[in-house]
Length: 151
DNA sequence: GCCAACGTTGGC
DNA sequence: GCCAACGTTGGC
Image 1 (cartoon, chains in turn yellow, brown, orange):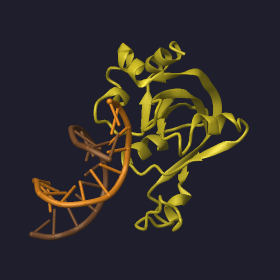
Image 2 (cartoon, rainbow, N blue to C red):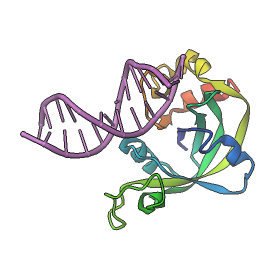
Image 3 (tube, chains in turn brown, purple, red):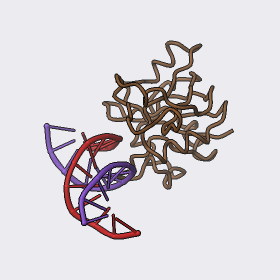
C-alpha cells in the first residue's frame, strides 16, 4: 500500500464529485507535468490518495479516494476539443497518463493548509514548501497518519 | 487580480 | 548543453 496526494481545483473536480457518486470511478486526467506523471505510473490498485483543494477559498485536504485502475494513456491528450490536448503526443507514443479513482471518505472538516504547515511530520513534504507546484505527491505512512489524526 | 516560483521550450 | 523567454501554478 502506497499513499499519495493529488491537487485539484474544486471547480474542476472536487471531493463532492466523488462523494455524490461513490460507486463510480472518475478518470484523473489532465496532468501535464513529468514528475507528477511518473508518480502516477507508480500507483497501484488500492493505493490511498488524499484529495487537496487548491486555488480556492478553502485550501486544504478534504478527503480520501483510492486507485481503481493503474496508469493508462490519457485520452484527453489526443482530443482536439480538450484544453489538455497535446499535439506533440502520438497514440503510438503516448506522453501523458491518467488513473481511475473512486471515493473512500470525505472528512468532516477541511484540514487547512495552515494546519498542514504546522504538522512537524510534513516539514519535508513538498506540499507545504513555498513555490512547490507538484500536483501528485507521495506520502509516507507517517505523513499520512499524521493527517488522519487531525480529522 | 497580483506576482513569486517554477517547468518547459527553443535559439544558439 | 546553456539559458533567456515564456506560460502556468497556486497562495495571498
